[in-house]
Length: 367
Image 1: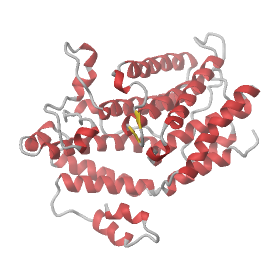
Image 2: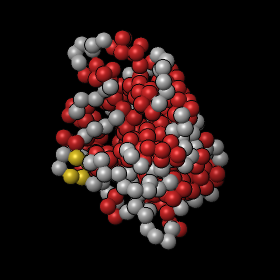
Image 3: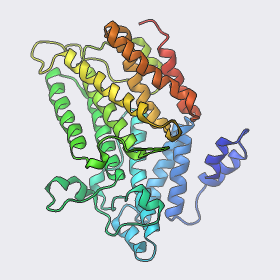
Image 4: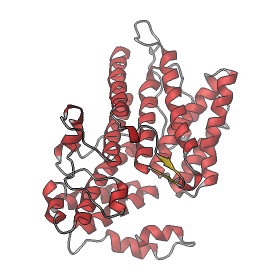
């Protein structure tokens, strides 16, 4: 935590010493050393030091598995006398799982080391209960979540559970969008993925349908989940749309949704390219609407979420300059301004700032 905090001092203090302390071998591996390694992996990733961050994440996974953190029994061992610590262990494991997926997106190979179905660790509770140290009894399992539509009794699942599910769908959607080859097969895969995304939204409880916005606060996990879902829709529809590739898309280090397949608008398509474009633009607009509804004082956007926003904004810029009529273009331009203005209204990491700058630079290139 001191190392991460050092980035907020000017100039940074004792970073090299703190790095050595945190990346060296631990005398004892326990849940706290796993947390420290995971935090260091995230800090390195946010500083664009991807190779060291990958090594640290691999170490965190190895450490966690060596002490059994990937099993239900690890948290259960302390549940009776310290339920808050048990919850901390559950949250740590599932954050390792999410970060592993995030790193696969950053690498753009979309290949993860962990599979949610392989682990019986209980799902985290709602964030407010954790903050109040009022941990509910009986953490539901991932299997309980996956079978929730068949349960005889309705169970409540936390935002963390929906966030984990959204994360899985997000990675699967991005992986599939880059592997589309044949148009007919791509149409089928797109249809299946869209149904999965629609199912995620439809299975949300009433209190999670739409972002829960309160003065100066927002459900950050659901915010990220919504951003992932809308980014997923953008990616699966772009290859089948009429939105042509432009060289400006190469500016963003985050990449952009894959370009259309050569014959995407050919005869025999279940949906024409224009319909896919409309779905793509609708998803971008909904993602943008999530940003518009956020109270400025509640904005906390990670570089990974910034990357999702940047990817969709690049596609929006291309559509604005090449695929929209005058009235639609005016609306798109206003929404693009919302994204670009974020860099002026919040302090973000150097990596996130660069990604915003890349999106801004792309808007200046003639298309």
